[in-house]
Image (tube, rainbow, N blue to C red; front, side, top):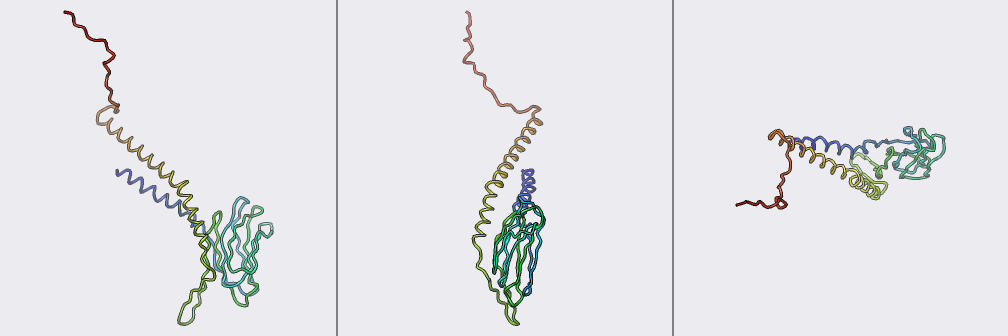
Length: 212
C-alpha cells in the first residue's frame, strides 16, 4: 500500500504538468503606438508545418497585418479594434506582426497575445481610465465565449484520448506490481512458488476387487 501511494505521488504531478504545459507557451506584450506610427513583433523562426495563433486588441482602431519570411502579406485586417489570427509561414523563417495607428489622433494601447502551435483563448481588452478619484474598467469588446467552448473541447479531447488511457495503464501496472510482490512473499515464506490446488479424479480408476 505504501509503495502504491509513493508511485501515485510521483506520477500525478507529472500528469498535471503535461496538462498545463501548453499555457507556458503563451507570449505577447502591450504596445503604446503614437499616431501614424506602428509597432512590429517578430515571431520565432517557424517551418511551413508550424503555426502561430493569437489575438490583438486595442482601445482604438488600428491596421493589423502579418508578413511572411519572404515579405508576402499572409493576413491583413484594416480598421479593427479586435482580431484573432492564425498563420503559417510561406517559407521557413520568421514572420512579423505589424500594428499601425493610422486612424487615431491619440496614442493607442495595443495588447498582443499569441502562441506557437496552439490556439490561445481570445479575451477582450480592458481600458483603464484613472482620474484623480476613481478607476473605470470598460471592456472594448464582449467576452468571446466561443473561445472558451473551443478550449474546453480541446481539454476534454485530451482527457479522453490520452489522459484516461494513461491512467488505466498506470492502474494495470500497479496491480501487476502488487501481484508480483505477493508471489515473492509466498515464495519467501513457503520456499516455493504458489501453485493452484488440484483434486485427483478417481472416477476413471477400475474398482478394487478383494478375493476371498
